[in-house]
Length: 262
Image (cartoon, rainbow, N blue to C red; front, side, top):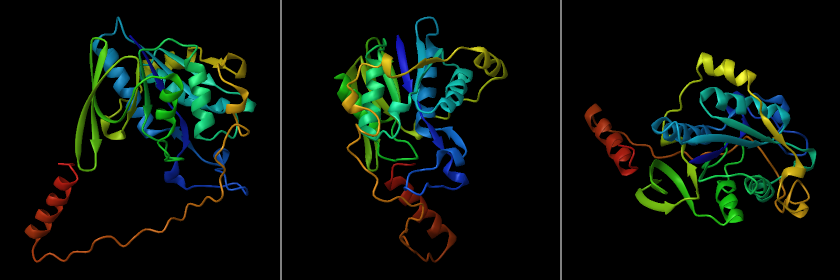
């Protein structure tokens, strides 16, 4: 079984968000991490591999600047088998359409039974790239994965919503988008770090992609940023004044149960 996990190097927004004069993120000025939803998807793939290490291979793929090599090596240190970096100047400025077209163009030249992506990236929050990749490839999509179970050539996924769950079963190949709540990702091991440092990361440019030039980079991006800001107004929320600590605890528990958190 071959699993490809799409991961992304994103700015660490906990350290503050910085913008260029044109309104786009100044990625060079910000610390970078592996996108949390993607890391949960990687952990899910590694757990499938743990259950059948002789027959499961996990490849991680990312599109980005050359420095995105760092998150690929982190994934290798966690236990992934191979890594692919898609990088080329002509791919810069891509929106979700151009990004998904580019990644799908790489996947068309790869073997896979299952593709796992994060639900969304914390630098865009669109949740569009994963489903768009599946559309480009003509395979089923199962989004918002809270649990993943592989049975033969099918996969059963528990999808999480605000008010409940849905169980979906699909034949492979298929694409799954993972929630950060899916699991607790493992840490890199010392041995894994040493192995990842020495391992070769495959690099592909425009020439290795099965995609039309009209669908890549800035020129292939129909979405244009009008304005960007890190200052988002938040509502006051609901204010309650319980008569006792017990009433406060009961109220919190009721809200958590309503959201299917407990």
